Amino acid sequence: MKTLKNIAVKSTIHSKPIVTDVFYKPTNKKKQLVIFCHGYKGFKDWGCWDKVAKNFVDENIFFIKFNFSHNGGTLKNPIDFPDLKAFGENNFTIELQDLEDVINWISNNSEFENEVDVNDITLIGHSRGGGIVLIKALENKQVSKVITWNGVSDFGSRFPKDEQLEQWQKEGIIHILNGRTLQQMPHTYQFYQNFKENEERLTIKNVVKKLTKPQLIITGSNDTVVTPKEGEIMHSWNPKSTLIEIDEMNHVLGGKHPWENENLPKHLKKAVSESIKFIKK
Image (cartoon, rainbow, N blue to C red; front, side, top):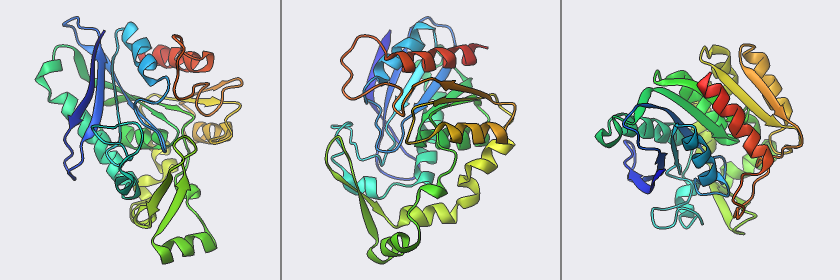
């Protein structure tokens, strides 16, 4: 397996790099492509994600994962959120453009032109990243399939409401504790404004109802962050989608950070296996 870590992909709308990893088995034959998107307070090097990449490569799939440009990581430190200012400036449309830029980067990269089929792209998103990949699957013709792992069904419902929303508007910023790093992660009010200004585009229900591409929804029965009900709702919006609930799986698919075991946790292994079957179908 060939692994290229921490490639700085250029953005078309801002100056921050989109820090990207590439995994593949050189064969000089075009392979199906998976692009993986992390979730809220997530990052490409979390826990099991490198081992996930290897599992896809073992099935001769070209695999890319990346940090959203404003996730708080940097090129020098893509893990521990040293750039909280960027985190506070993040929003959904930035993340959608980051994903678009990664697709365009791999599509126009001569280094990989004999190794990857850029017209057979599967997007996989975890948690909040699930919403991002669904929107992009609708928007980008190169995307052929889309998979969500404990993916959200609605962005709008996760914002503060009533007095909390008014307080956020008044103060211009709120903070959320990161349980791993113990940092107070900032959100500026523009995050909410950006959502409202682009609400039709960012309403996942609108997207899923229009999807004609194959859609796999994987949920965990023990997920208390994004409950299985959200997967059931999405499946009702697109009855042609495939819904798989993994018994006893939690929000992080049985993983943790750091992950020091050589093998994937059993629930994540099941999610990967079902995803590979879906891609190769």
